[in-house]
Structure formats: structure tokens, C-alpha cells
Amino acid sequence: MTLRSIFRLLACLLVCLGIGVLGSRWTKPEIAGWYASLAKPSWTPPPLVFPIAWTALYILMAIAFWRLWDRVAPSAQRARAMVLFAVQLALNATWSPVFFAWHGIRTGLVVIILMLVSIAATMVASARVDRMAVWLLVPYLCWVLYASTINAGVLALN
Image (cartoon, rainbow, N blue to C red; front, side, top):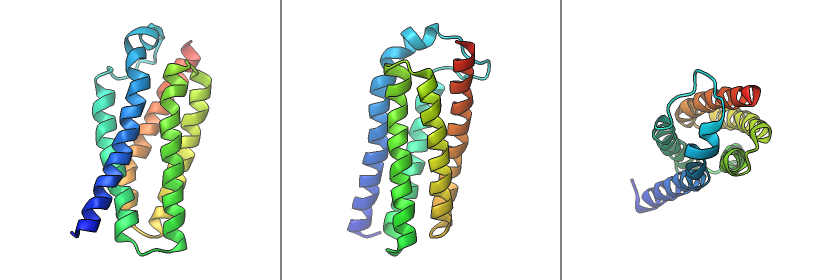
């Protein structure tokens, strides 16, 4: 791996994990208060699961993005995959403040559904240029699908 490749990997890790850190700033203060007071579906895991799962997912996301940036030759298809990745990452960054800070359960559900669509679109676009990037995003898609059922359950129960 070249120095340039290492720099790109570190940049991808910094961006993706940075989104996670920002999200936790909105989430942490609400976990013991507002969120704890909500009725939640029976399949909601304990709060400790979320930071562990998200950290692993952000690392996988960073590696997927790095592969698109570093391992794929520049092309229109690569550019499309990278733009879609940025869109889903922006939606990811939006969900925590909407749901936790603003207590926007319904709006959070809209955001997370848009995130699911954009993750799927990212995966479709990535499949055209790097299948490994797609496989690295599969756990993320599954987790966000699961999280969307929790968001929908919280909406239904409250």
C-alpha cells in the first residue's frame, strides 16, 4: 500500500467515524432521558449495542468508500457511486439530530427510509465498479433496515 493509499484510508476512516462521533453528541444526552421514557418495540436491543454496532459499521463503510476512491480507476460509474455514498452519509448524519435532539420520531422515520434507499442506490452503483465495496455495505444496509423498524415501532407506540 502506498502512502497515498494509506492517507486516503485514514481520511475515509476520519470522515465516517467523525459522522459517528457527531451523531453520538446528539444521541448520548437523550438516551437516559427522553429516549428512555419512550415505549419501544420488543426487538430493541439494549443501549450498549448501538455504539458497538455503529463503530463496526462506520469502519466497514470507510473501507468501502476507500476502495471506491483508491482501488477503482476514475470513471463516471465510480463518481456516481462516490456521490451516492456521500448522500447516504449525509442522511446518516442527519438522522441523529432529527430523532434525538429534535425528538422528531416521524421525521426521523422519513430520514431513515431515505437513507435506506440511498444505501441501496450506493450499493447498486458500487456493484458496477467494485463488488467488495458492496459486500462491505451489506451489514450497514441490514442494520439500518433493522433500525428503521425500531424507529417505526417507536412511532407506532408513542
